[in-house]
Image (cartoon, rainbow, N blue to C red; front, side, top):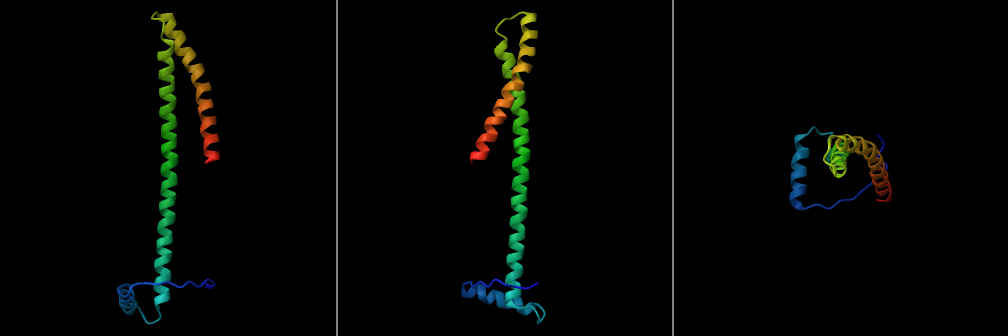
Length: 119
């Protein structure tokens, strides 16, 4: 692999001594630059894994929150419509809650998506 970018770094004497000691443990064709490159490569790979994990966690958390929000919205709608205490009112409350909750959830989702595009 052709190396086209050069960087200069500063380090403490202790870091330099440790690096020299590590290089001496490897075969002769391993240089300090090779060891530094490998350390940077590993660090960058770990960061990519970490970013991927965060994205997965955020997505699964968002899905779980959406699910809980839908259930909570339905139950709250049922309670709101339960002003009357008879059986017919209960049936009507459940039917109306189901109908209104879909509309309400669609509106909440649209607001959330709009907010995410603005962030």
